Image (cartoon, one colour):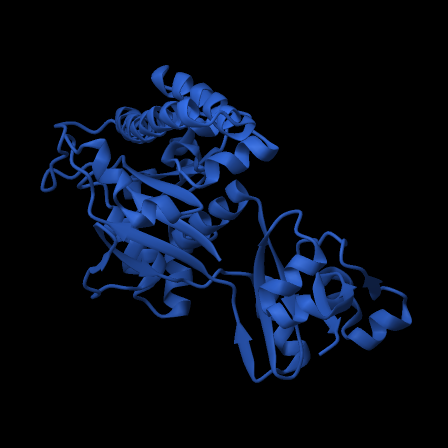
Length: 363
């Protein structure tokens, strides 16, 4: 499951956005490590999953999910260590930084003015400072270990961390480094915050919505950030969309249309998160259930089988695969077989977005 942690300075609307995405409007905060977090697991909207149950009439329809964590917002003077100590930050696949662009005299900004670009850089600086502390402490320990026993692995770890420290001292996030293979693996245990993909969510005024304005606003506010590696942006008006989320489906659709929006803020943020992390969905179908599964792009059929159950991966024989478009065009698996559109694939087959898969396995 994709895990994303929301971050943002106070009065940014971060908690409102969390409520919008998770429908947890009355939840209390629960302890998670040294920081207080709450977790919401919203369903991933997918029109393909809306159509498949009509073909198979399953007892259950199960959407893919994303885990979003919300935590107390760091203030303008929050120390970097406060970020490091929050478990949800460290374990997240991506960070979602909510930036305030809306005006509201009743809710003053902690810095005294609205400046999304300033806030984006301030948070980036916090992440970089937090990682710099982690890197320096580990390098100090490595130097002591190398004096006791010099090994090639310790030397390589020191070299990689030295590169990281240099980048951080220059004010560059680690997601900007082009680390690959074994060097990337060496850093995973540190869970560096600035190495994580970053989705910037601009929280707009209602007047900035519609007619593509939300997209233009995202680029206008944080254009320089969007040129950086592992960074993307989306824009919502969390306050108004939280109101829409409380309406009946038909009324909500009409309200969105009046605002010139084709989809909700939830859809836009989740889609942007998926694109940023390179996630795709495949489906399993049948009389019991139709279910969507989320996996990173480039996942093999063998690993995808393990997402369903370890026993399926262990006893993997073949994957019976058909694309979504051929299936809905033909109307049934039988018709797809008649037209040669159902394939048998092996363990190394790379699952494609929208694949409908039946895994054959030995028990």
